[in-house]
Length: 230
Image (cartoon, rainbow, N blue to C red; front, side):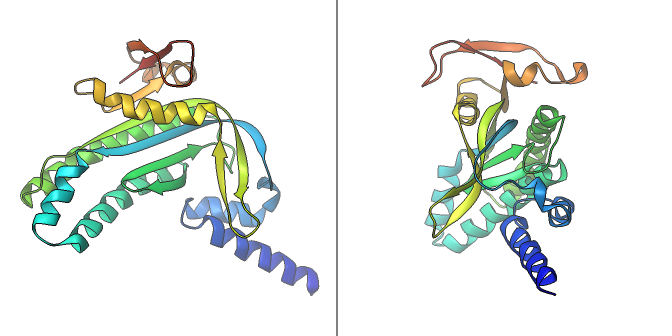
């Protein structure tokens, strides 16, 4: 009976920690096999996706002028909900929301051999969904929005991080930072919603490989980074 109670509490803890960040099927897999979730830091190769709304300030001003901050919150939540569903459907984990930005990871806590492909696929589907939302926004008289996505693949440390009072399952490392830099770099290229690194490009199937865009120097790295787009 005690063992049953302990297992039940563990399953509830896993559900509470991951139900808002993972597809329900993945949560069920973790509950069935908690050994998949290592506590503490674990080094592993993963793919990282950063997605941000470009042109968010004019939208904020639009709602500010209408004295409708609640409307802005509803709009952002609806947008992020659509994008989150794309990530979850492709097996990714939403690591965190940062305002109008989403950070997602692929290949943790559930193993995903094709994590690079799924990360890029998610970024492409997000771009397509954004085009659909543009029409809806235009009908409401809202300013046009764009999105920028950056994808990178590499090693990081992933696990429960934080203080003893509060911790989250997250990841840190240079490869994570590079994905964020690539997302910011999309603003430097016309009609480019997604940039991904050569590290991601190397792991994509032939059907997804596209042209080289540039070689850029990003903050914190000495060597040039080759970037691609679709």
